[in-house]
Length: 251
Image (cartoon, rainbow, N blue to C red; front, side, top):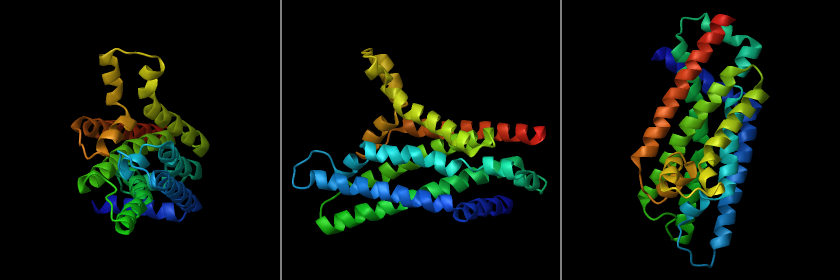
C-alpha cells in the first residue's frame, strides 16, 4: 500500500504542476457558477415544482462542462508519459503494473472530486441566504453527489483507457469525448427514432445518465445504476491494465 500511495501522490502532484489543471479548474468553476446563477435567476419569483438541485443538474449548462471535463483531465495521464519516455523509467522501478494503473485512475478521480467540491458551498450559501431548501431533503444532496461520483468513476476510467491507447493527447481527448458523448446521448435513441416499445425504452433507460440524474436528485437511490457504474469502471480499468501491459512489453 505504501507503494500505491507514493504513486498516487505522484499523480496528484503532476496535476497541479501542470497549467492545464488550473485552466480546467477555472473554466469548470466559471461554467458551473454561471449555470447555478442562471437557474436561480430563472426561478426567482416564480413558483416551481422542482427543487434547485433538480433544476441545476438537469440543464445543458450542467452537462456541457461535465462531459468536457473528462477528456481534459485524462488526456495526458498515459499519453504524456509514453511521449516523454518517463513511463519506461517508472516501470523499471519495483512497482507492479496494477499499482501504476490504479494510482493513475485514483489520481484523476481525486482531481475530479476537487472540481465538484465548491458546488457543496454554492448550495449551502443559497440555503443560508434564502432560508429555503435547495433539495427535497438533506439526503437528496448526498444522492446527487453520489451519482456524480459514480459517473465520474466510469468516465474517468474511459478517459484513462483512451489515454493509454495513444501517445497523442488530442487523439486521446477525442476518443474519450466521443465515447462519453455516446454514453450520455445514446439512451435518447428510442425517442429520436420514435420507438414506443416499452421493453426497448426500459433497456435504454437503464444506461441513461440523464435518467439516473432525475432519480438521484430526488433522493432516490436505485441500485441498478450503482451496479452499472461500478462494474463498468472495473471492466474499463481492467482493459486499461491490459493495454498498458501490451504497450509496455511491445516497447
